[in-house]
Structure formats: structure tokens, C-alpha cells
Image (cartoon, rainbow, N blue to C red; front, side, top):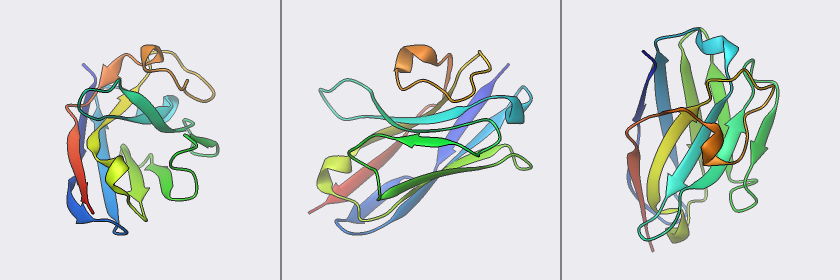
Amino acid sequence: QVQLVESGGGLVQAGGSLRLSCAASGRTFSFYAMGWFRQAPGKEREFVAVISSRGGTTNYADSVKGRFTISRDNAKNTVYLQMNSLKPEDTAVYYCASPSAKYDLGPRSPSGYDYWGQGTQVTVSS
């Protein structure tokens, strides 16, 4: 059974930084792309970033490009999201996700992902 567990969320002032982690278990981590999504109150879940199975390719939402960095450590079965220059509009619950298919790079749509973590709250104060 695939399990994803996020950590690292919290309260930070605008301009600050946080690093989210997502620990995976239950299958061979290095075979699958990993994605980060977020959902703010009253809004749909949206794509943030995705990384290929070996970490060589990444893709970002325009809203976070240049501020967020996705990375992974396949030896530790963990994917990270380094978030810098945080803005109040980044406030949301952040989820890591993984598809059941072996994409070269995961899709940007949440519907392309089969496994989800429980989420971690990120709150950015102005």
C-alpha cells in the first residue's frame, strides 16, 4: 500500500521560506514521478510542481516559478518543496501526490494522480 506523508508546513511571514518534505513508502519510489499541489479555502486543488522519477526534469506553475524548487532524494524515498519569497497568496494546504502510471514527467492535472498525502498547512502572514 502506497503511503505519502507530508511535513514541514507552518506559519511564516511574507518573504520567508519553508521546506516541505514528503516521505513515501509501499513501492519503488524511484520508478515514479512526484508532484506537489495546493488547495486554498474555497478554491480547487491546483498544480504547484512536478519532478520526474530520477529528478532530472521539473515543471512549475507560473505562480511559483523562480520562488519554489522541487527536488527528490531517491535513497531516502523523499520529495521536497523548497519555498522562498513566500506570499500571502501561497497560503493553502499543500499535498504531495504520485501517479500509478510510470510517466516520464507527471501531469499537471490532479486527476492524473492516484496517491495523495494527508496535506500540510502553509500559512503566510502579510
